[in-house]
Length: 485
Length: 95
Image 1: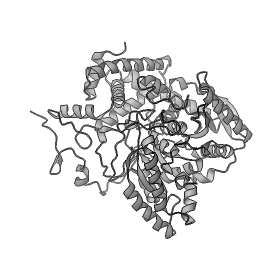
Image 2: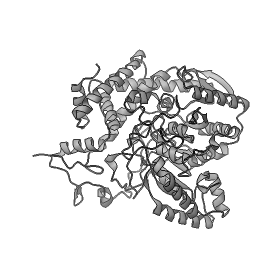
Image 3: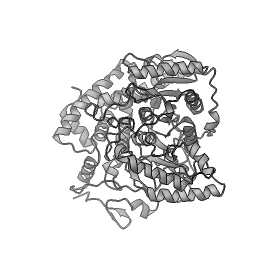
Image 4: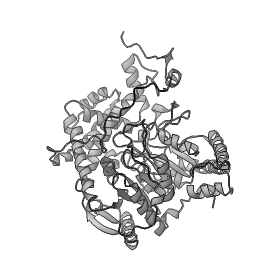
């Protein structure tokens, strides 16, 4: 096996057995990135020099006997995480020249573990999109079929794992932006419970929905990464002060008696045939492992997309008001006067999808429409949360598809934003409810595209879904397949 | 039509966006379709439902009112498109 194909756990073994150094592993990864990047387009910024310096420091730390499991492991971050001294664009022309003066807490924690940063990954502009096509820095291609999208908005984070350009990555998930690309690229991706991971230094899209999480080759790596970034952060007033368990200890392989809910609203007629077949097989596998299935109802599912696109755009229009050309980011050179400078800077800096969402959000918050749209959506959000609370009185986890179809073709949906929004139907309710969920590889379509299953857990129930995901992985080989790229 | 070209122009002014004719027409059609879709929320009676602003109960997060290290002027100004001394510089506000 090549170094660049290792999981965190395997590479950690090799590093500690002296089979390879972190410098050698990092060099192998940089060469791999170089050899496939023109076909994938996962990266916006690469940092080879600082990566090799960090790897050398990691080798010294391993030699001193003071290493974390992530010491010397080459990682990459979605370009939404502030990295001090390293350009951070959020996929936008607005921030094409932005060098953050401080770092996101999630990255600081990984850096303190001694991990190595290979670079910053491509994404939809300001994390708004399901395909990575809204990036101002070129499209990212799905390593399983380069005519198709990798998913979004953490498309680069998932494509980099599938193309073996990083050992693990971080993404963010506001309406499915970790789980959907993980499903489309055959990776494991977890959106933690809201408040589990600090959002400090993560460029804000919709603050009541955004959450940070890992994208990895397998569930064990996912548990390792989550353990490293989770936990209370006084710099994020919404981070929750709850102890962080050892998530790897939850991976016992034993799920006998686990009660899994199947929401009838998610198993609909329009579901892609290959996705349905993958779910049927997954249910069979879980039965064999001793899980019990319960049919449940999440009756407000059909209202989730409408609710989400009012709340998320309203919050985005407010968050993105900060980009005014005054303190950082793009400033127009054509302007006359202050207001004109702000207006032209925003109009030149933002792409079409971001403008569309700012417009929708501004409309939903504007005088005369605030109650009819924004407050109405917040009330329906209460109903959607109630659906999950009631369901979790009867079950330990919920099993659903991640996306209604495998990855679509590049360009297929760009002219129809509403259709693109509707493809997020199975992931959005989880963000509105604030709970946790993960995508685990569960099969392939007839044309060879990966299909993921989604395990939804109770709030702060990450251990249960990780255990269930791990048990599934032990019983199947989907996660072992590799994209030919 | 839920939304007219004039509505789009009004909202663009509120959002400090300058749209050309093609963008205005495109957004009018797309926003109309999306706002038409979200109308479905009116099927639900929410008269007695409390709005949710955060999934996790959030309380005011207080800290000691003590001096701590901060970013500092040089770092805060490092990304400024234009600056003078320790200030951001912007076009004239009042003519």
